[in-house]
Image 1 (cartoon, one colour):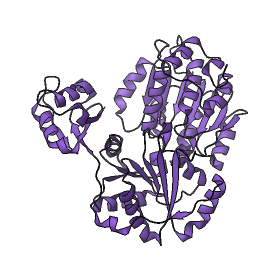
Image 2 (cartoon, one colour):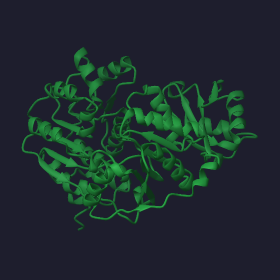
Image 3 (cartoon, one colour):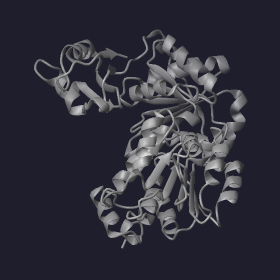
Image 4 (cartoon, one colour):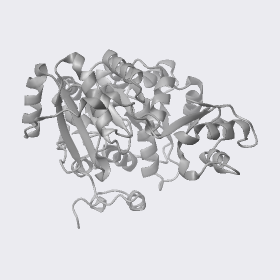
Length: 460
């Protein structure tokens, strides 16, 4: 039997059968190294990147340990952002769909408090949430953690970077010390080690190799004369490669916003993603990037953590990250799942010492390449092929993706190929359509009906 096969694990039959139906053939390195210890109820610290299969690693541990007949909160999973929490909850529901009556509840900021209280009154087995909102519920007495026997800290380094230390302390103090604790983190700064020492019992440490395969990710280095020249280099790279979806990483929130604004001024389809955005603006930015109606997302490392973005064409490092591990983590966001990807890094002479550190870490030499021809700057900025339409109705109005698709492609409508991703929120829906039919698609939605009702729609 293959040692990476899930059937090697002491998992209940229903979970193993479900893994087969999900097409989970063999374990990823983080699953192979951590799951045997997790299933032995040991505390585990695992260094693993987004996209490494870590959610399934702790998710299977949570589901195996769960006693469905005890209707109380038995596992708490803490995540730095609402996007990651939603993604984790979705994965756990999928992994546990063969076990009947499992209740997984997400508790995150940026969402109304009242409905969460109602959901908690109905009870749950597994809570997935962000530290701020979990602490709010504990403070108001709407959440009790007395029965929790498994605590998971996902993306622990980002939670600390985002300033959640005091909330984490407050939450962990309310959970029995007679519990299993799992910590997943992409990097291991000293602060993480201190937290681990304080809250874990003889943890097993797992480190998954994070260097990336050159066959799927091409790394390119470009030299800017100085800080002012950096933006020109970025524009040249975007015009030369024209990635359908690219994340440009900056090291500060202020710079993130400035770079996004300047790219927009030059005609590029670019938006910023950082911690100072309102939740509504963040949601809309991500909707437009994921559905390919924005080509360029300019982001900080903290804001981009936990984003579930498939097939990212390019990662552009506006500078090398402050920590080399973080830089390598950025690069790993492109070229996933066998897709080809490119990683482009801009440096100045002042950053040569960081480059030396990166070369040492990757054990390879990275030489600057010639810049693309400067006359590319005279051409209009390239544009994405899709645009986004917003509909003022969503899940609460009982809208489904099929209703929106039907309204667009019905009598005298546009073709199915001209419709992109459809995303539903409680009171809003977003649909991507081909740029060349945007106005016609908008009139179809505005003048037609969905579920026998008229909804306002607009181009965003």
